[in-house]
Image (cartoon, rainbow, N blue to C red):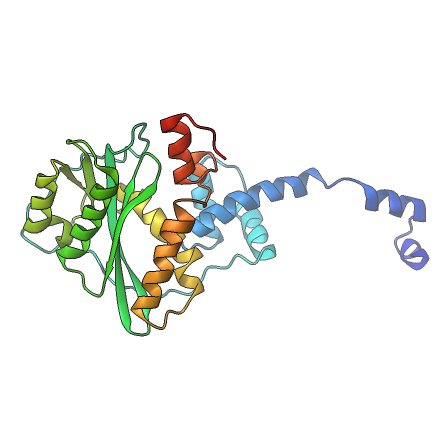
Length: 277
């Protein structure tokens, strides 16, 4: 220690005073920025580098230079992952009717079972693709219905819808929003919506932001579950994804939009008035 003090021409007492000093304001600010950067990094499926993260922060009116974003990402090991194989699940090349966009990005909903959003994604396994359809209630972001299959036929979306209705028993007039995929536009699916007295809504062509909540859900699922595992079979993937959605996501995972409680806890607190355990 004496040699170090002599090297930098400072006294030992000054060194110990510096060592015990509180963390600088700059480092505290870096910690705050890191939490924001990490959130944007995860939401965007680890695909964003510092330029795009910086751009998103500017859109949120968060003042932080691009160099600082790059440094914080580098120091914390946040590096954009290589592009993965892309599997198209939305086939809008059909002649079925297209519904009006009734949701219109109104993602803040104060009442349950008024607006549901749905989307389809793919899960890679060693047996081949497993396709997942999920339905979320925008009120709590809870996954109220889902189905998995080795195909992309309309039955995939219909089974998820039946599950959601069985568990939620919504009143007539619910707005059901999705993309323009053939699964949702098909005659069979539209007949199912009519049977439940639901009103169909669809995103504008090629606009993923119209269904952003479903996109974010899939991003979270893939970052926290799918990208962490290599499924030997579709059966294994089914089991793991079921556990993630039903046991972890709905019941336990805190959600920033819900004041950091889980969807189930949010519904208990705001619908029944009971205190969150």
